[in-house]
Length: 567
Image 1 (cartoon, one colour):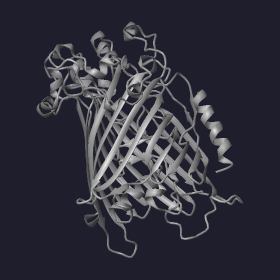
Image 2: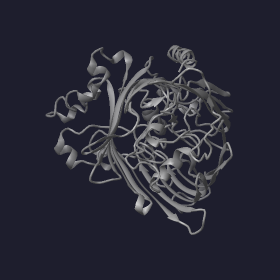
Image 3: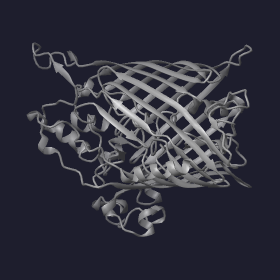
């Protein structure tokens, strides 16, 4: 908290003495975030931008006001006139997001908001300032969640709880964030930085997104609140004789939620299985880079890596803070029985991914994918032979179809698949669950939420989306199938009837009107075998009809409403 207060004071002091060139569009900004990506498919945004390193900024997008791309006027009231040359100050949009879950928590990619039942809201506003190469943004976020209780994991079998704690003892992912209403004030999408040509250096608390996925990203997404970090990044593609490059290098601070995995006190929940996590914060370091070959316009190839370690387990050398060029992945390749890679020997957890995105403006389409591992290969041969080991992946495509008429409307089709469940190699070799770690036992999280794919450990998600488009306006339907933690299900539940799967249908809309941007979503979720439960029919003799049982499904409604006012 002290670091947040210090950064706030710096921003407030400099905000009164700082001109606009590099406005930043926060990750997940309703309506606008995906609008620019669609514009690229239509050939209206620079094709060398990969959209795989976000937040985006205006040096790449080249708009007069990144929040008002369709403005036809030369006067923008969000800018405050000053008498100081080279100084520009801008009022940032006021944003208000509300959501409701009727029966159980649902939804991710919502930043500081938490998985909770009941009503929840987030309000943000702020100010941006620039003076020559320096720029400052203060955009805090206030979150309030009703945080009602709900039916949580409730097995009375010791074996099930041993499996449940095998995950939750190694990740900070509480079922409920306390027992009452939840209130938090974060620095949100705030930063202070210096820009020199295509490079930017600064301190930030912004959310980051690495990778081409639209709904899930393996290493960095906006599912968790943003964390305080130092960043060195490109603010637009660097164009060379062989192609274009983008990149980002970070070092930051991760905090725990402060909550236990579940509420204690129920004698059938075997509380003694809980192992308290170490105190203190974690250090995260990471980098991402993309390359777009000059000879293949629209194709971006990328690589990302990240490392997490408790601060008290770190050294003070450069390799402790920037471990990207350290020794090989295994210290003793002749003894695979040890089951500890070099990252684990250094008390840190590591992740890596490779990704691509191919934009085809002529066909108004894009294809993308990301492949990641959370357990390093012994050597290049092991990587080639066991490519499936500890892998996760995302694959997706999107196609726009132009409709006849003067409005240049489009229809959109989008498909994305994400798989985080362990592969079959886990039956013969150690295969840690994604985002959980027996070494860094708070896992790959910040304040109780996952930094990567919001679907969570062991899960898989399939999403199909159809919509009508007109500029920033959009009305559509989304179908989603969400399998909850198959690693836990296959390893510990062991009943083929109990796989927990959410099937959902959502109607959503986005609309711009004058200075306002509106977005809304109504989603019906049918949770089949909710919390991996069912009830046997006791009247039936055992084995008479295995598939006759009382279903423990749960219906849930997820409602989201948002409005943004652009000054």
